[in-house]
Image (tube, rainbow over all chains, first blue to last red; front, top):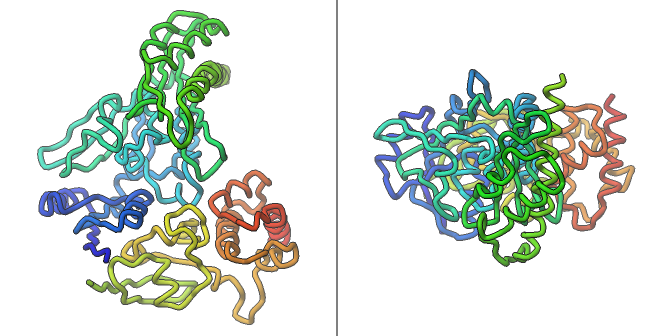
Length: 292
Length: 157
């Protein structure tokens, strides 16, 4: 028999107090599209669910110097935001491909990264947008770069008594174009076989700065630093992009595995194919935005 | 098991449900209110047979804990037809276009389509397909379903 107490604090202080009071007995629920599924599939529930859905102050997208996204912002809000679509395009690509409309209407960006699935569709985009994750707990506020947030499959640095409150993207990222490709067999209701995110900053035809993020390519979402280093300062040419794709797909950048959804050799080919395509799309997007 | 008392608006009427705290909105609709239009297909938010509209947005009622419904407004397929039994243009269009085969997905399809048309009265085919991407029809009658939504959109204009 599944049984739990369902608590609905309406502010962050109360939520933190409840998490502290119940300690290991409690778990946080936001949109519920992961937590409810897990309870149903495992037939096990924590003794207490602390629902943070009523923390309406954590639902926002704005730009004041930096881009700030509240943890409870839904995928649907990201998908429908012009700011996200034009200036944080990779995040639009990722958020709009999660699940279905019904799922995106409730599933939150904070939940997507706290669940920390290797396939999380917002993780790749946040990696290439230099996102910083803000958390609040009994000892106050702290933040970590998204590159340090994931510690393993379904594991993060978030402590049991903390709530993820905000995702911040540095204002300088407005000079980058970005794109994300979710490689999957169907267009909807599917997890990616592989995810590839790229952001680029262009100086005429030269790639002056670049980030490459890969998901389902390692136990956690990862940056392909070696491939980025290779591309910096090179022209946006087929040769340079192909070589960057090869480096990104190699063991220098990721650890591809055979799984139910795809085999390692296939995943490598997808990285080699889509790193160049996403880099070109990202460059095209920033040049279009600049010419407006 | 602890019971809770949840008050909300259901198809325009103020209601209160006294149900176990661990029930979902779907279970409450089907077993407390005996509104069996929303179906349980997968129970994990994949199939969309349980789709209802909460505060204007299509959601999977199977994933919605009942305490989250307090003070909200929920619309189900049962609230669509007029009081005299006149069908909603979406219901009418699904009948006319054979948008219904076995019928299991139909109430979810119609509620997803209604949420779309309420926000976008003149959707493209792609927008319709995106709106119902989370509703599985295992009879695979998608062509007639999309045509039904297109017809209803014209009718509603």
